[in-house]
Image (cartoon, rainbow, N blue to C red; front, side):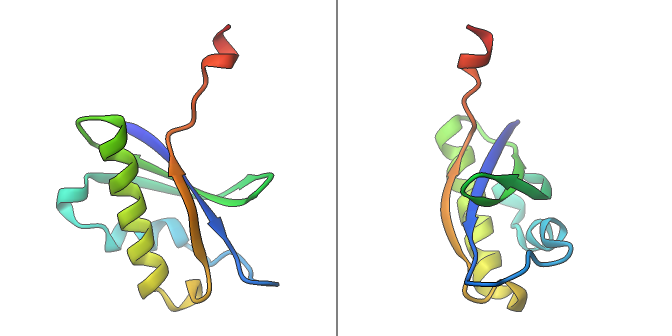
Length: 97
């Protein structure tokens, strides 16, 4: 399982939608392997969804998370105008060095 951080860009003045993580998870397709989505994460560049994905590898996990979140941005009215900036597994090697 991988934790993919999906960074979002909000339109000017937009509030983060309520229960966004649950909405993304409900829209995920079984073959995408989305197990859990954490919303309300904050990063310097803006809001982040934490997407837990079952996948055979890092790139597959990132692609699956991006696809599921992209679908949510397109289909959930509260996300109208939001864009997906990137979907990446956070690297933590600097912490361990």
